[in-house]
Image (cartoon, helix red, strand yellow):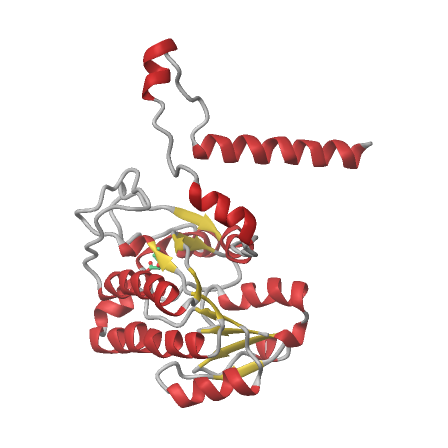
Length: 281
Ligand code: VAH
C-alpha cells in the first residue's frame, strides 16, 4: 500500500487519484495534519500523520502495511523563509524520520526535490543535473539535503530512494502551497475572475514550469524496477563504462549524432508511431 504524506497539498490528491486507478482505492492512503475536505475524505482512505511524530508514522506504516511512501510534506520556498525554524523541523527532521522508517521497514521512498535546490551560483540556462548547488532558501537547502541523504541511505542501507526535481507546477483544481512559483497558477484564476493580475515577480523573470498531469505521470513512471540478472551483471561489470572514440574521430571524422536526449526522443517517437500504426490496422 502507498502512503502520501502532505497529501492535501497541490499534488497529493491528484497523485492519489492516479495511483488509486492503478492500485485500487483502498491501497493508496492520503495523510496530512489538516482536516480533509469532504471531496477528499470520501474519495479514499485518509489518515492523520505528523511527520514530526516518529512513533505515529511508524504505527501508520506497520498497521497499514505500507510498502511505498511518497513524501510531499514540506514548507515550500516562500512560506519556509517566513518561518525558518518550522521549515527546518518539517523539511529536515521530518525527512530524517521518514528515511529511518523507510530504511527500517524496507519501503520504496519517493521524495521530490525542486528547482529550488539550486542557487545563484548554479548555471541557470540551462541548469544541468550535476552542478554546484548553493540554494539561498531553507527550502532549497533542505531539498539538497534530501537528495544527498536519500542517496546515502541507498548506498548505506540499500534504501529504494527515488527523487525528481519538480519545476513550478501549474494546476487548475488544486492550489499551490506558498511557493515562489504560485503566481503561475494565480494568474489563470485572476484572468478568469477579474481579467487583471498583479504579479509579484518582474516581467522578465523566467522559471521552469510544468502542468500537473505531466508531473504526476512522471512521478508514477519513475517505476523502473531493477531485477538484476547475476550473469549479465557480472559481464556488465567487466566491460568498459565509457568508450574513448577519439581515434575514430581522427581516422575518419567520426561524430555521434544521437546524444541521450535525442536518442530518447527518437526512440519514443518511433515506438509511439508504431503503437498508433498497430492500433489503426
Ligand atoms: C516553490 N512550487 O515555488 C515550489 C516549487 C519549483 C518550486 O518547489 O517553492
